[in-house]
Image (cartoon, rainbow, N blue to C red):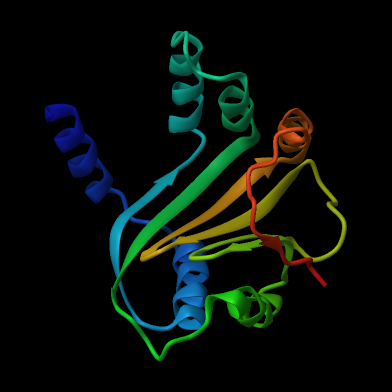
Length: 179
């Protein structure tokens, strides 16, 4: 449809920032293989309030999505596709390999989930949150697709979202605890 064409064309205009590129490169190196970028988007304090305002007029937006939109202050997203498999790096220890690399950037894993071909890692600054707005980094590897997100979030809004979702388990696979 023309809407999809416009959306894809628009996403090609934006480029992701150095932060999400470095974060994405970390996971690409840890996973191995030849990764090709599909979409890279960066958004900040101008576009996000507009999206929040527009979402207020859409009746079917779940409360959790509205809370997530309020939590995000700025975000960079990068989606890559695995073109060629690397040296056969096992996915079960991808998070541990990434942990070592991200520790050098002052980030520690706070959530890790491995379920078959899916891996999810959430990283935050080492130590307890010291400010209401914190940097977080999220990695989702699903088959041959790698999605990385680097964002400034409102910790209070994020905690509210976690509280709402606490009774709704999302993953059935193993959980890797942060160290």
